[in-house]
Amino acid sequence: NAGVTQTPKFQVLKTGQSMTLQCAQDMNHEYMSWYRQDPGMGLRLIHYSVGAGITDQGEVPNGYNVSRSTTEDFPLRLLSAAPSQTSVYFCASSPDRAGAEAFFGQGTRLTVV
Amino acid sequence: AQSVTQLGSHVSVSEGALVLLRCNYSSSVPPYLFWYVQYPNQGLQLLLKYTSAATLVKGINGFEAEFKKSETSFHLTKPSAHMSDAAEYFCAVTSDAGGTSYGKLTFGQGTILTVHP
Image (cartoon, rainbow over all chains, first blue to last red; front, side, top):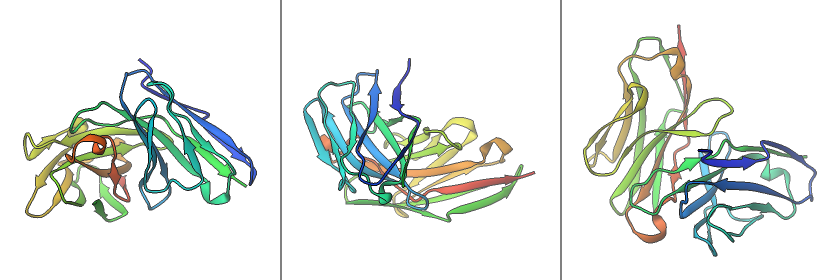
């Protein structure tokens, strides 16, 4: 059982480049989320989805786009990378019930130069 | 709105000593509370969670936490630290506001635990 799979694990971008961080889960969870982790700031929610075709913004959505065409996949797109987007990105999924835990991927370490 | 504050960004203990990591939360509706652990270069792993069934919650690796509504706290403890406990620990909250509140976690800033021999 793979759980939540993120690719790539590491990425270096130049300012202005675009890329997509991939996230897939095989647990048939309704909820999927993207967080970014920065030192001393914990994890902050970027975007989330409560099901295929439904997405919404989190705390820090600027500069990122998402879509959810299937239950399994929830890609995060950076349209024009900026140095401020240098961070570790985590994808998570959870089932649709009160108090359910979130399951996290292994993270993508992104550096924008 | 909800928020989490972890007191102390770094905690250092000796092997065998008590571990106490502090977490205070703010939530306008009944909260669900979680402690996650992150080992270097890895994702987050659930240690334990509070979902209103019992105020004292036991988790993996000998950790436990007590929900105190009057103090809005959910501190994490372990009676005897092991070297393998060295990691970063995150307290998180979500709420029973229904619908899209599930799965939207608000995290504290994290506490790095160092264990000395």
